[in-house]
Image 1 (cartoon, rainbow, N blue to C red):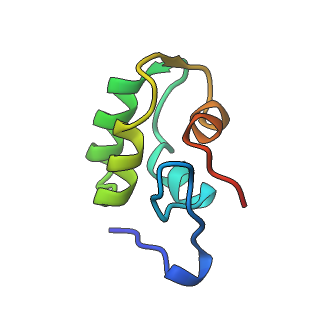
Image 2 (image 1 turned 30 degrees about the vertical axis):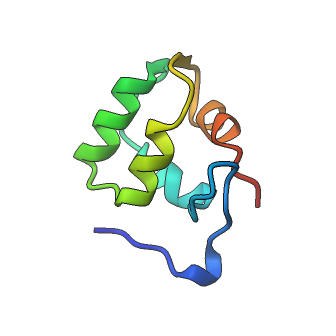
Amino acid sequence: MRTASSDDMTGGKHGMAVNTAELQWYMEDISFPATKERIVNLARGNHAPDGVLDLLKQLPDREYSSPDDVIRAAGITE
């Protein structure tokens, strides 16, 4: 399972310590557009850690057009 060190992580608006690269890693095999439910399920299938899954579960329930769309909705800044 992939993990990130606390040195390279930033908090999103939901208070999770997840960075852009980590989130993209767990969304790697997702075809967009995709619903929140599909993104969460596929990230779980990619063995995303609880912090990533918790962040994805808190996203608005809608269809996302790209990984960047998910990252913006999650409020992750680097």
